[in-house]
Length: 113
Image (cartoon, rainbow, N blue to C red; front, side, top):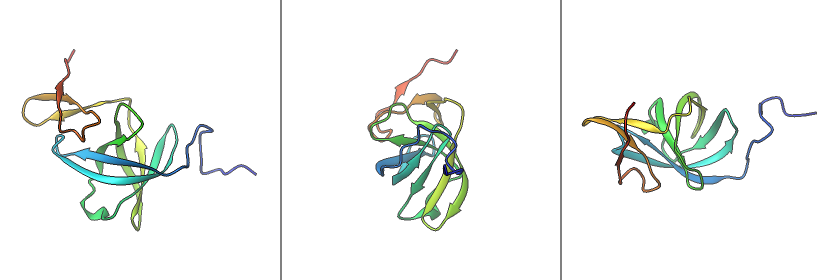
């Protein structure tokens, strides 16, 4: 019998390193991605108390980052749902920024239509 909790057949279950970006691109927290699908992911953190309800997830071998919303918390693991295909995060100092593989330390302006 198929596992009904995994809604998409392209799910990846091998743990991978990643990090989340929030606070206008100025804050990051490392995590382990335990499970991913087209709809969301399960993320494991050393300290979940500092993890906000919304953030951008960067998976080391994926580009671009994915906007996420936390839908459940259990111990050190969070379940997140991917929002729309949004790769920019608002820069609190003036406009959107494109997040890159440098833990959002290198910010590149993104034109706004």
